[in-house]
Length: 422
Image: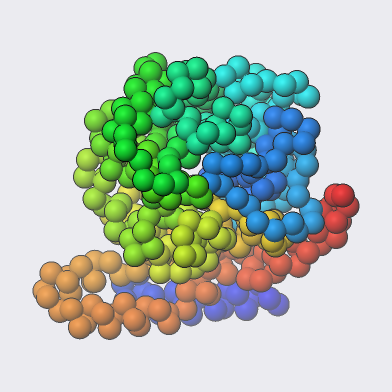
């Protein structure tokens, strides 16, 4: 009975959208191009598996809360991710940090990691029929304790992190080669100063030098792509972040790299959605880290808000799907971690489906005719169009829980699996 009601509501919604020139079936088909890279660190609060008691420390990153059920092993992370994937419509990807290697209990420092330490992850992705992205882990390490990694003036430390980045890029290329889809490797560092520095230029010279050295080897773009990620500030680096947006944008343009735009890494009044069409005038591709900042880069679970909607709309309106790589970057340890995953990912997907149901051609015509009242009024009317009926049908078509049904599934998983983790 419920299936019939969903289909009936969808058919009525389809008629409503057709009245404004929107092909609902085409919008649903286009959702196949929305492949979201799921960040593995939501499962275990960015702890990783370098040591048996690995946990996050330093570097301006902090997961707050102690909700029961945190993943303690790679097997548990994979099980949690499989549950998440089963509750999401469409095809997604995995985003893995270097500190999540499968080290089999062996202590392997980050300047010694190899593709073999990530083969089990590659094999898992093959089994799931998904792609994988990768990240150098330049934090939570003794050689990052002074607040500097690739920009360090301690030459021994700097070379250590250069070697780590070199190896991460080689691993990424191997991932992409084996999985048959390019692996986006992202570089973010926490480097900066708490109080006013004098030699800003000196640290940025070091960072540029390190990036040049680490990225000296070129890999086929069908195997891997490099991205660099900026940040406005972090805990303990309030006065100066070495890898600022200006620095990395310049580096990306000059060296044909991807710029990673994290919508929590800018001033609260800035909108990443507004930056997309700007940077894509000069870059072939970009990487997005979609999150929800509150006050600052607090990485809350994504909700369907105006910032996320603008990001999705800019990609859809300009058909930037082939030029934008979409990843998530939030971590919340205060609520059910699987629930956070699914809620945040579905919110992002909803933003894209809403954007695909927009009569863009009509809106552009109103804009070019300077009919700004009509443009505003049309945008407002779109907010009460029956999007929910289309979303429900999309989930039904993809054979995943419809509406709030996923809540009960996650609650059951908590009773059966998460509650047994002590």
